[in-house]
Image (cartoon, rainbow, N blue to C red):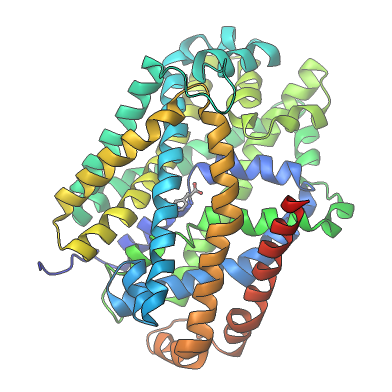
Length: 456
Ligand code: PHE
């Protein structure tokens, strides 16, 4: 078998991990999850989840990838053979998430093509909603019908897959070059949106809604579950992605600090994206006299219904900002999407000894075809169902197993000693306590509780 490719240096590796972490999850998922789960108060479970699960799991995944120089099934299988199935489960989740992720990117392409007349289709909430459901999703059917695949959606999907396939196929050096654009550029664009948002009249109303804590919500365990789910999704942990990315680094790579840099940049970006989104929503609420509670109710439609309608109300440069927002989403999403493709394709290469070019092509073509039912009017329902099962059960299970396997079988002490050889920040008893007891307990409770609730 050919020698394993490696990232050029640690900076490129961290950039790739940050690119994977920062994605649609930050700009599209985080704001509505935060708004639905206590606004400012959500930041408490969110930060708790970051510290007790996000960063420790990222250290674990980096560590497993680096020490085994293999994908998730190899990394876990080397601890105990049967655990390789859990590795495959993570990889399967990456495959599913990528299928739905690319559908959302496909919608975004469609929006972009429609953006010149954002002032028309986004004229008010009703018009924007109609545009999303009728022109983009073509919803006319219930969840169990697949109906027709709409040509526009098909082209959006084809474009997305071709782009990410071409990037991943070009190898780690090609990916490294793409990252030089796809990581910094969306950050700059979000800062532009943020400055625009903050200078609008009414932005304070939106920010108050986003940041004013609803403390009462903290006793609701759903809020805590949402925070853990969001952290996993946002940091790309539990999907085998960080294991795959780390397996392309030499064994003497520094880990804990790299994990901390990746995690904090991701969470700071989410926070900023939330400010950018809510300041504009506040302006919209004040300008149209719609209460903020109603404005932020849209759930997944926040970025695609309410936000465009808000942008369409800007005093000047409506088209410019509409396009800027969509390009930001595309740039944010593309490096997350190709990290997901890489997760699956690297696993296939590791398993069957096939070349990168063959494994990426197989994965891309298969995922594209498997995604077609989601590119119909019924797609959004399926997307919701998939998101729920993957996030509430599968990823949580992977995370619990990773913690227990490293904490108890490999031994938290041994793992820490190995990691600390090259660490800039040393890990010790706290890390050990978290992965052996705290995180498995919280996550175990969450899986059981969700299941019991759903059975009722
Ligand atoms: N972290 C990405 C986001 O926030 C999504 C993702 C999940 C990417 C899992 C890779 C693996 O959008």
